[in-house]
Length: 431
Image (spheres, rainbow, N blue to C red):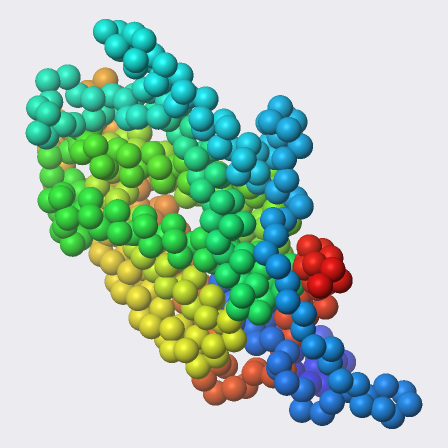
């Protein structure tokens, strides 16, 4: 807030209009150190103070030399026993327990495969794709939706929990400590963004690979609608969609079950994940996987660069972080605005490319796009675009302050006064 704002408010006439609520919200989020978009770019306290701190006696205090901290697993991720971990959902934080859960269907599948090889393996539905289109050739197999997909998604929710926690605990936390990060909050945020780089890097590459095999390659939007319904999917497309759903469902459960400490934008993130799951599930149900794949790519590709910028900021590589953030804004502009607007334009102007006999509600034929569905598709993508514009304004404000230094050194992160990780403190004392 501007200096002397209290004096200004007391002297202003009662009828004077207040500032724009959008501007106020942007300002609040921009300086919120825990916000998922802008938080990491709120500069931390300078690592070297301009004047050494003094105590009341006038003596200069010298900082204690940092002690080495060995690598250790978070106490919150230790197992209480498999049954207890399953009862309390703790398996989502304990890789050993999630690995055991994952192993059960695999052992059952292997047992059936070798002892009853002449019979179809019922456990294939858990770990492998179901719903192969009868008669589709082996050199070009096709898949359709199946009720077994629910079981597949459930299994891979456990899989993503195992992958996430294993990478966080055994790779990213140690890397963060090697980089000099000790505070528990920053360790978690560094790991969160590191995992995001890994996942979104993988998912965006997979999305582009799949799009390369489709007639929609690089946003040939007319093929979203031509030859609809697109009910028979490439194996890679079906696996991609179901694994994306499992990933976002796992992330949603982590939030709503409060398995991790809620952050200030908790409600915002819950709604974001809810809308994402709704869009994935609905587009899969109504055979709109082509446009769903296109939306995924715009989201995942830009999120990768956002997480890279955050990681650089956590490592206090200020100049490189600013350059990375500028590059990220360019990627975001192209992916989340230009391409997203092209998709919106396609929904509005090219929906009628669907054959007339398929512009009706007839689920048994795989046809779901009655005339009113045009608006049902347009509105969610338009809402995403409005949210993107809101964030876009915020990013430019953050970049302006980072480049011109109007905030550098003035803002303080909430985690300035956070205690060191209990594990780090304990190991420091032992050293």
